[in-house]
Image (cartoon, rainbow, N blue to C red; front, side):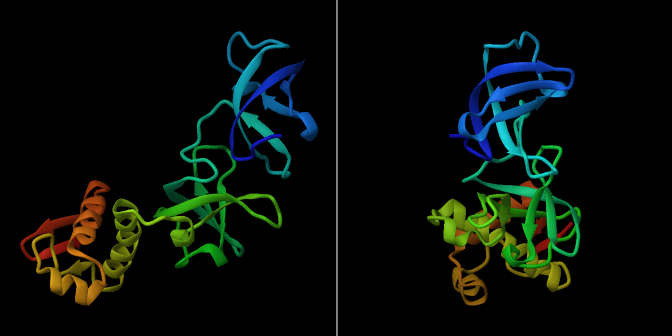
Length: 207
């Protein structure tokens, strides 16, 4: 059975002008377009490919490695939006859809968001959700990544500045944000590494 949104090792069964067809078992033959056919590929040989859905919602293969696969978390940039939701750049020709119902806030083009990739149970399409809490076990690192989104939103809604820095009192941090100082410092570090903030004695400021 094909693992959608994941890597699969499939046998090449046919060569055509526009690529090669791979044996997808019960899912039928799956096209690997010419631009992704590696040198030396031939009928009968097995090849590792990533399987996703094309614009017509048909299974398609690629030898590209996306930024994330089903069951994983990642920071992805919003490439564009429409009346149904947002489309995130995950390294493939077809962007990854995140519907409005799966967004914590309306996603904006050019902004990055921490999301979880999954297969929709009803439509069996690949999609992203920013409501990652129900998929996380909340290790300290994951909680910090999750909170960094909240902290970024706080800065955007409060003039781009927060007077609490990495040396601020733990009680003040807990009172305002309901997180530990350790989680707060990790979130600051994450935003700083992404070059979204500067850190000073007066707190943190959006770049």
